[in-house]
Length: 143
Image 1 (cartoon, rainbow, N blue to C red):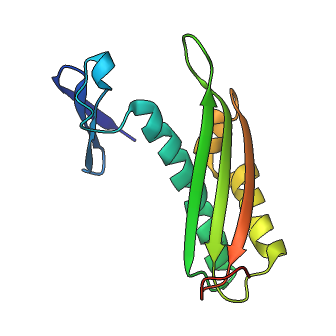
Image 2 (image 1 turned 120 degrees about the horizontal axis):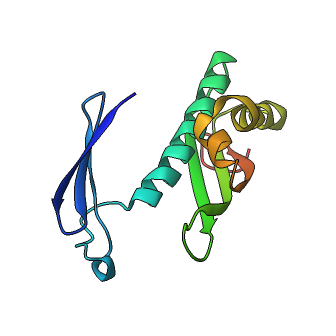
């Protein structure tokens, strides 16, 4: 896996993935940026949520469960001082579909957390990571 990060100006960079996708990364105004893109640590957090959500969705689909939507809301706390590593990360999954059973979704979340999500497992070396979920019917109400 490779990436290329090119400085634009001030605190702004353009990052290009090895697969050819690009994203703007920028700092806050108080750090010399213009707030034109995501912060690096935000990207790390979003990547972790996406990695885990991908796993959960893949596990459920492989089990032939009808998933209409999967949202992962991520909240994190960082250490005071430098380096300001993540100390706590919580992933909350909102999975919707008809006929989804709590046991099945719980297993998918656990498998992601314990076996498949490389990002969360790696960050778990410095942060306490927790997970929970809710199931919503495809028609919008609690399942």
